[in-house]
Image (cartoon, rainbow, N blue to C red; front, side, top):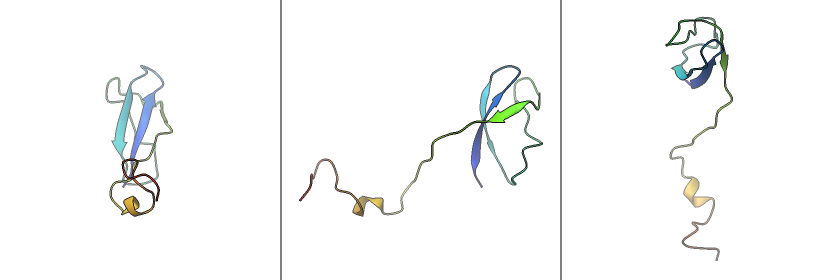
Amino acid sequence: MPIYEYQCEKCGKDFEKLIFSSKDESIACPDCGTKKVKRLLSTTRVVGGGLDNCAPSPSKGFS
C-alpha cells in the first residue's frame, strides 16, 4: 500500500495519505476539507534489499 503526497489546490497544504485503492476521489485536504487536491510526483526510497553488494562503498573504493 503506497503513501502518496498531495497538495491542496485551495489552501496550498502538502500532505501524505496511505492509499488502499487506486481511486483518489475520497482524498480531502486535512486543513480545509476541500477535495480539490493534486497528487505530487515524489521520490522513492528503497530500504534493505541487499543493494550493498551491487556497488562499492565510497569508503572502500574500487578494487
